[in-house]
Image (tube, rainbow, N blue to C red; front, side):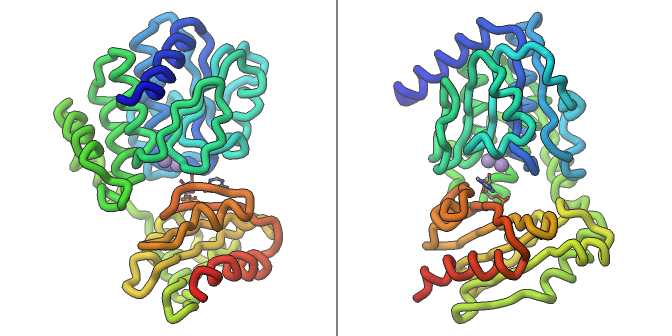
Length: 326
Ligand code: AMP
Ligand code: MN
Ligand code: MN
């Protein structure tokens, strides 16, 4: 392990040992990596320090796909009037991603930030940030090992889910030899990966399928079919009886079209708030594009929010994307 990383883990562990009132937080619109990492870390800290008061802040709705995760009920709305000693943010590149969690962060005596986004702003007192890591769960795995806590089946199921989802089922370019080594160790604990994968991928509600059909039938192509843009409007949600979280996955589907280099999904959260998801395949740096709109992410997967209507947001993002195709 590189020295700096080891030192940061040592400092983080010291804070965990020092403080009893610990608050753990994922990002808003949580995904498998953020949920898997908060749950596994909370379980590990509880195992390390029985007397610790470990709380996980519920910052948003949890997608139904992840309700099977062990310990999911630990994620609760928390009282801001409680004493907050230590705040631990996971899988979040900046404090805006924490939603209500940011209020707990401001009250905390110390902050630890554990993340793998290349755009991470190092907002913690201690930052365990490794952009070469395919998922935050891989970093949490290393940290739990460092804590010398034995990884049990529940922790392993959570970590496996996060690694699996953030690496696109171990397929994206962020998947490494080390990813597979870690996953092999997780499987060795005896977790049921078949059941986990069925829960994540073979459990699609019919409303989501209808939303996919509706969205993809309106696919727009640009730059010789290298750029694909899809939109999920509130009207489409109403028509298909789906919810916005059902749009997760559409952007990857568009990216997977043979001609596509950049896929863009525009989600109409409300009339003047458009959440943008970007994916690329080979050469376009979508983190750079997202950063121009105050967002962030990774080179091949990034996002931002644009305040304006759908048409305006589409025009602004598309203009930025097409610069890479001139
Ligand atoms: P998404 O398109 O929402 O699945 O996000 C893709 C990647 O970009 C994830 O790693 C997110 O954490 C990151 N990301 C999405 N939206 C934002 C944002 N507004 N600010 C910073 N990072 C973001
Ligand atoms: Mn995430
Ligand atoms: Mn992640």
